[in-house]
Length: 263
Image 1 (spheres, one colour):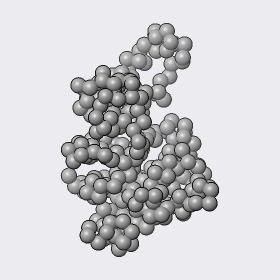
Image 2 (cartoon, one colour):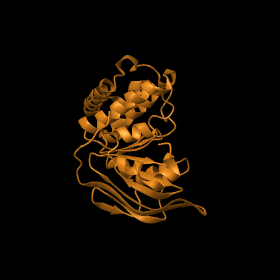
Image 3 (tube, helix red, strand yellow):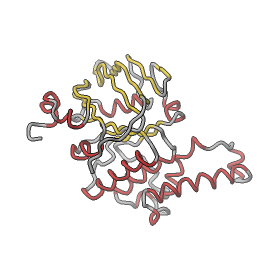
Image 4 (cartoon, helix red, strand yellow):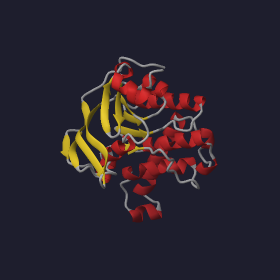
């Protein structure tokens, strides 16, 4: 499954000297990194290294006390969550955040909210532009369902699905927003080997077919080394490595902090 030679573009996202404190505790200390168009960047590190905090800074959930963010050429001291979503940043989470009583289709449909242009009154009466818009959005959602190979469960309430399929539905909801930058927080956590292989293939296909730039947090080093163009390593909120998978694998500081000599 290893991938090499994928063409990447210009810098899409740049974070510079980000420091994030919670009270007197520093979750992130002077972190800088870049994400280029069309690449898959993995962020790795031990539990508590600051990985999820970094994603939360990128999509505006957390606002750092120091540093700045440049996204698509626009510089901000902090990214607001609504700006991130409106400008093409989508996110999945460590813990599945789906509407368990709603069907697969309806859950993915919620990812289209920002794409809806008609007003509440039109939607309530479901006529004219609202009807046309609804049909267009449903067609897009059906494309995603086909892409993720979940046609057979499209009307099933999400709460009845096994964990691996729920993770796939959450990916579908993020894809429904048509993101330029997709943030995946441990997309394969809790999966068995077969489910991980399926998710790896979907991530690679999203990157290749949709041209989506992807930043992911993942603990499975086999997955990271196979699908990533570049790897950033965090340890206790500091960046200790940044390079290709082979470069990171040979970094003595990274080996000492995380990978272990057996790797």
